[in-house]
Image (cartoon, rainbow, N blue to C red; front, side, top):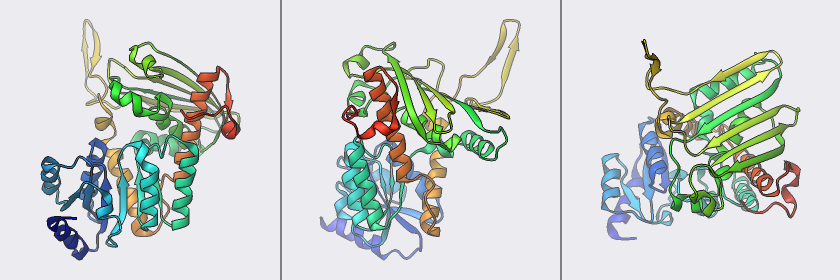
Length: 360
């Protein structure tokens, strides 16, 4: 550690504000979003930020937001007793090692999804968290969206009776780059994993069987990467209820996010968020603006709320709202879907330990 960094870390240890002090690993798009949301909270502050590509531009960005210590490695501050929580926003293949390191250092952990690409590694990470007695929250931000929270409240409150059908649509406005695709884990682990978690969240049920179909309809790059760009999954829940999820990597009209739950006593549905509610009525027809175009616009408030609730859980000693087990269950569903697509048959979640279950 150089002299300047050592002085910065001493300043971190010496701050007596009473706020929960946070370190963030990974200063890409999502790491910066979380950093800004933490800095807006009155009860927490980011005091350290690490990224292997940290440069002067990142140091300037951090300084403008009151983040004093910027390092290339989290080792330089991980064992600082003043830091109580760590946000892991680095690439997925680094998550497990960082979770274990943070748990051993006694830090509470927020980790972006998925926990890992390998089921056994995820279980190892969860075991390390449990052994250390710290909390782990997984970044399923959609649970904190105002629309989806309302569906959960209505279903949990019994207002539509027993759920029979769950329909989830999730379509991105533009496909990702080939570089991203090659390390993403595929459509089920990278994209639909949010919808698997949403299916569990709104129903309060566990999946027992999954069937998947998929095609390459948008760009041959997906086939070159061993992936599909268009997919439909059906889920059978423990109660017998059925879930249907459709994903597309390209919706030309914008970010398409819809959920419906149909039950024995009625149904509840939410549609997309729009920039405004204005409708233009003319002789040619009725028009309105397209849905919000990108996930950062659509879920900005949800990102803020998940950070707020994570920090509140630490401050109050309460359980985090999205656990490591939630992350594991969504990951198991993603692997089951990938296996179903590969084998061309439904896959039971109980098959997860069989040889047919290969890494996605």
